[in-house]
Length: 254
Ligand SMILES: Nc1ncnc2c1ncn2[C@@H]1O[C@H](COP(=O)(O)OP(=O)(O)O)[C@@H](O)[C@H]1O
Ligand SMILES: [Mg+2]
Image 1 (cartoon, rainbow, N blue to C red):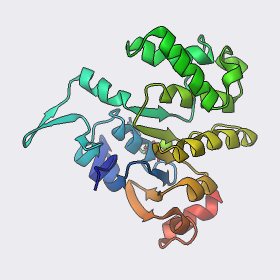
Image 2 (cartoon, protein in one colour):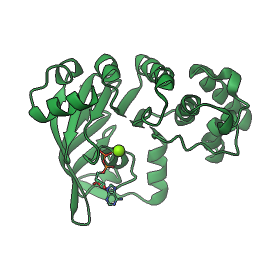
Image 3 (cartoon, rainbow, N blue to C red):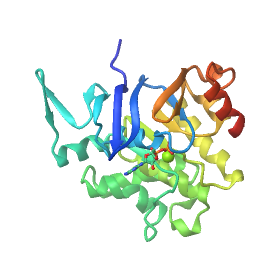
């Protein structure tokens, strides 16, 4: 058995007195797509932020690719990572948000090149070639010189996906990537994500696109109020759920 890409065991997180994650258990195997669903405020974004070292967990265990998030294992002891080490780990994880957060003063190509060039990972010319091929991959080869304001929301989101891929992540996190898009632009973004999954990328996707979750997801996880209510094969969980809470949620989003 290979090490899972993400393994959460009893993960807890609170903000002040508000308990947001109350013991999350979740495993994402390599090459799998895990779709996270649940009502607003259930802790989905917080959980993604924990995976990506943007929040510290307060309890339980969370590991990415076998390494405890935020810590380095040394024999039996855990040592807290320094900021620089955290940044290095974060580079292995691509994140795509609801809002695309592209740099407005940079072209699509420059946005995609930015991180690899900034961290000095590669020569500028290599970064440019790679960025161009990523834009091609997301169907935007002919938009490389456009600025974000000259692109539709769906195109901007595809640039954001290309930008996240530029650091060659081993894991991609998507936080409601199509929620801010006009309905007719959603399909192109989901197509890019579908292709990425088919190419073997490990993905955790917070989405309310039930069709996508059913078709592309290897697992569906339904969260409510900081706990996992139900998890399993999306073709069961999202079609014939066992829990009333899951059924009630699905009847609202479908
Ligand atoms: N930095 C923060 N400080 C205080 N409360 C927060 C913070 N981030 C999230 N929360 C609260 O945690 C709960 C879960 O939020 P979130 O993870 O964004 O849920 P979801 O993504 O499922 O909508 C909400 O009640 C939210 O207000
Ligand atoms: Mg959220």
